[in-house]
Length: 301
Image 1 (spheres, rainbow, N blue to C red):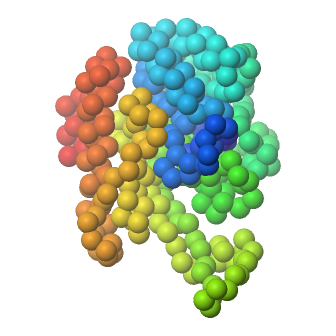
Image 2 (image 1 turned 90 degrees about the horizontal axis):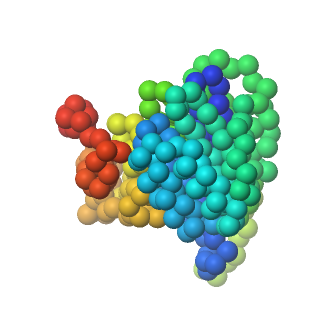
């Protein structure tokens, strides 16, 4: 399962999701790296899923082929068919040409005028309802909904067994659909223990903040390309997500030494290089769908 929340306001759409995967046929949850469940398919069309991850991956790849041909209604029909046959719900965000937010559940598509969610949404019920009646007028990427979503994912408070991993987001506008950057800390507190001793801590104690684990979600510069990176500095590890090339995130060793402080820039560059390679692979495989211009390449350099 998972959680996906999407909100539309005028011509702007915000889509939020976690990355944890726990299919019924699997032996256990995949929290890190998990999967990128919001996939920008090009041509200002994005799909997000909740439910059985493996068939959802196949459904998204099939829909991507239709989006490449600009057959957007056929892509929605494709997702409806997969939703009807499998335990999957979808949300689509598109600008073709107007902004449209659509939820697909049990094979039925419904246009949404404000906000919707799929997956295990109970931990975020109050945030969703607050966003529904909010009078905020700033960009959705700066909304309370997004900041509270990030906070809940990073603290992992009362999320249950099926929600977790990294907070991901896409801002969808008529100018493009792009992944959003996010930085934060997983905080923790290790108790003093004697050999063989067992200690139980409350959530408040665990997240008291004496220690921290830094997280950076790194998008690529160009919009409408499904590639995103995550950097964990203390672990000297990164993950690159490219769901049209592989279902799960690919682990990247960012630094070949024990200490990490003072080498942050080097690790970010290593992750960025791996992300650029994924983008170039996608542009070769789907030249009409994911176009890399010379200007974009110069911007990345």
